[in-house]
Image (cartoon, rainbow, N blue to C red):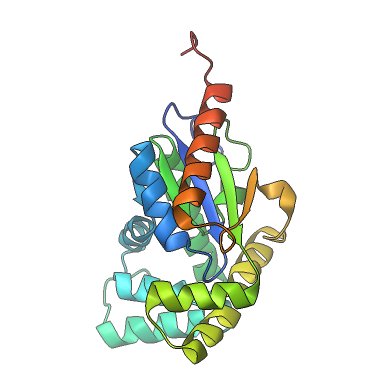
Length: 223
């Protein structure tokens, strides 16, 4: 099933979550999914796409690294694990296209049964899908660095380095693959400074907004 051929809507909640480093996406995402009764699709996307491409998760995980070094590390990983049955790769551009296409296919099909999707351009892939809620979590860099130190248990230097690299990678991923800026407010229904509110409140806001989107897309009395 192609992205275009996927079902136009889902009777179960779907939330895409774009989050800058330190904004708490890895904490908020699972909690929202649990509250809505749907899967949290983060590691599950990686596992599914790796299986589709017939490569180990280790290699696929490296491919998700920041673009300026991720592709090279992806091929290094394939060499390290000695893949003999992987699909031959003629060039980096073709392989990047394959990876993105499989990710899009999985997200589109998974959305038919509901889920919370963290990153990977979900806000673009499902942009026109009725009932889907698109959320952006951000906040001032300094506040996100402090929050990341608390969430991840890392020192300030590590958090600062990750913040710079991950923020850039997230913006470049959407720009490179879809010709859009991931910071465009028109891509989101809800933008939250998740450093100004406690994460429990952030979860409450997203759950309430998702339920409102579902009511709008599936009014009572309609199938």
